[in-house]
Length: 203
Image 1 (tube, rainbow, N blue to C red):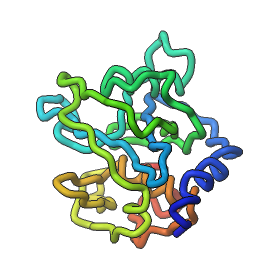
Image 2: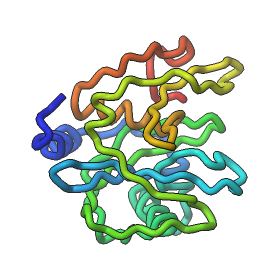
Image 3: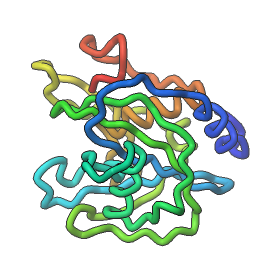
């Protein structure tokens, strides 16, 4: 694990020159990281009345709109609509490869630095709560294996992290695992399912 003072510089350095594989993208999420001595990743819990992924932990984001100038614009627009994060407060520092959700959407993670003192407000129509998790937590916490779902006709076990009353799992957990591996060479102790053994980009 890098020294705490190097977490942000190393994240910036590792993502600066990385270019995701060109691919069809249907949606985008923003992975907001606070720019402070002890950086945190900002996450949300979706409202319980949502028709999909109700009550689940997720990054702010959603489907591309025809008015969006780019996939980055999609992530920033959705973040403003869901948690009140102004576009001008986000410094985009990189992207990860797109992931395929269990319903077939290709989702692009966009990594952005944000000020630590921002006051964010959840849109009650979509978001129940907003919370922050130290980056160091994901570099030190043991992964849980309690969550499963059906994917491509198989029951798949997915990595999950328990943080207080929140369970971070599924696509969101895979994105975090990919981020900390790419930025910090941190290998999560997880046995990938056979259907995705060659790539974690297909869940």
